[in-house]
Image (tube, rainbow, N blue to C red; front, side, top):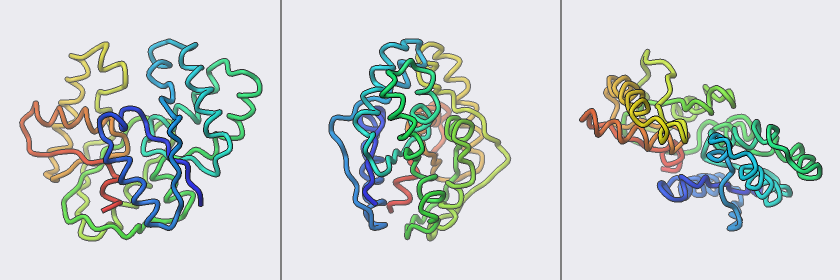
Length: 237
């Protein structure tokens, strides 16, 4: 397949290795990956902050850039959720709205794309470390992607998947929530980080860099040795 890659702005600026790993992984599976340098933000942060007009402009730009793509894949449940579910809440121009209706089912989060679209769980990865999985809120609750990341991790050679009873609580990031309510965000993050660290795994993985960056800072605050790594980097290893 010819895959159009969408890289969220936070990943681009703060975790570029996630994007590079996504390319390595998809190319290793035999696909052609195309990156359109015109892409910018999906508009989620502006949308969540109430700036609907500005978010609509970014949404329409996204749609115009990707409307002819065979498939669009992003290593982010959060941004994919915005595109697939929340663009309908913006007052898109009629012709752009038609393009979005055609496009939205061709936009995929990486793990879901591998398992649900390509029917692949073993991507030929090897990662000799203990790992615990954190389910980000948008991925789990908006996209209903729950088991797919775990299916992929269980097939990684030499990976020890540590699963526990810590549930699927939020990491406290929530986009602009963490900026508006920093003390509450840190308290939620520290609670979540403490629970995840209790399993003793060396790495905490997930499908959203925003959550992982927030958790990594929490691990430092609570003074534990765990660190985060995006699932794309494990699957590309």
